[in-house]
Image (cartoon, rainbow, N blue to C red; front, side, top):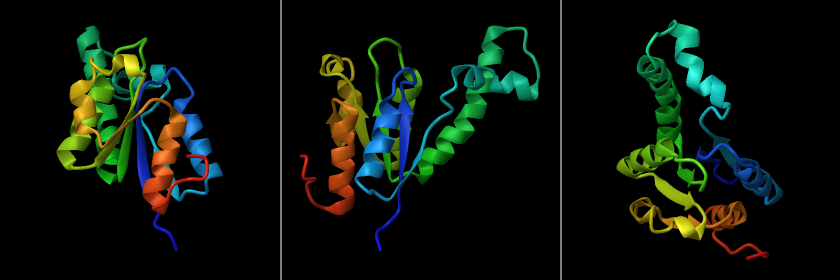
Length: 155
């Protein structure tokens, strides 16, 4: 019987990278439970005021949402065996940098995922990671190796 792994998928929400990793892991038969932050941007931004009440100042509007999202994020990262952190090139993913730092502080294994052109900008984050991938398919191969202890046939 193989161990069930918990993998948290953090970062950029504007592409299909999560789906590609989840589908690839399923095709490889990997025993992984995936989790992630809330990826619906409007829900994530407005959860605090929708539940706790309206705020007149944008700072407090954002503050309420960020704190509520942190409950989910921290809990799921604390449960994770591996945290995959995706940085896209179009948007600033400050939350992903926080997630990577939080996971590193907990001693959780981190895989970063980004275009090589972002390597210099992310050198400190990559320094905390145990692997840096350029595409979701490489992440699947890393997971397959780590979980099964052997190289995939497609590697």
